[in-house]
Length: 418
Image 1 (tube, helix red, strand yellow):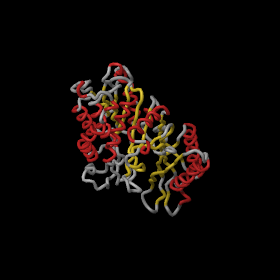
Image 2 (tube, one colour):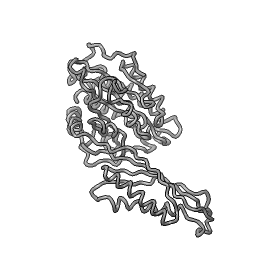
Image 3 (cartoon, one colour):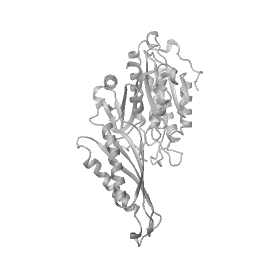
Image 4 (cartoon, helix red, strand yellow):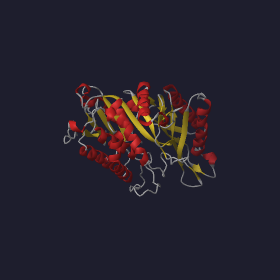
């Protein structure tokens, strides 16, 4: 529901005369202790996809304290907040959208931090606690400065599992008040992700495809159970699954052009109960990543053909469940040029990198990209002097607090100058 406690406009005397004159750095320094504390609190209390009740409550508490109007309960635990323009000529313009994800992963934490997860088997191994804190910091600062156009803040659930971005889009957050969101419709949107491979203080992105589409599969090979000493009396589901897994690797090796990129990974195999029983079935699960619609279609077709024909040849039946998940994250060329221009002014050209090739990771920011001009960028986390930093989805990972100011500044600059 909408928060009506905070004013839609702050008193005029708190605004700077022009956004380019706003001392963003000083404002960021003033709020860093509180934003860091929020980040540590969120890290300590992680929540899985669509279960982000406490996280959502923290977001609402901070927005309310800053006097920022918001709507909660969108797509379950999502929150969308809004700051109008502070000048009349900008009040009718589309807003600039800024997005952060809130959910955690089912991983046992091994970071050793004093604020490590207190929820068994769940941790912020992808840095969404950092993303949420950055967006809160940007909202607090933007509430205090002159704004030439409106700003929409999207706090999204379930990026890791469940496609929360798609749910938020379906709930109408991009269309503003008329479609179920708040304020003016969003005209362009920006998102970020902490990136351990990028140096601290540096940001990176590229126009076009930045992150891959995601498809997931679950295959059950069904054979005939038999005694381990009499395999000729059964049809071995484990053998069929094994042959299928090996044969699937030929799709990328022999059906995909060497000039294109695709990944097919089997992540788990489950079968059997004893060493002397040939089980009735064997299950394997995994993921497929591609960068173009045509390649995505071909990978799915070849997957079914390989698995079903291997199963048939070995006297088994293949039961395939295929989940068409996140599309390719495609950065709009104009929005990306705007990002590069603003980032270079804010950070210096030496701290802004153009990514050479897409990453095969997936992101449900892609659903926003399909609706309006969008740009997703990587925020450097790797401290100086280190050749490596714990990677995303590893139990040792922790979002680097020193990256928070850079993320906040860029979100503010994008809102004020895009």
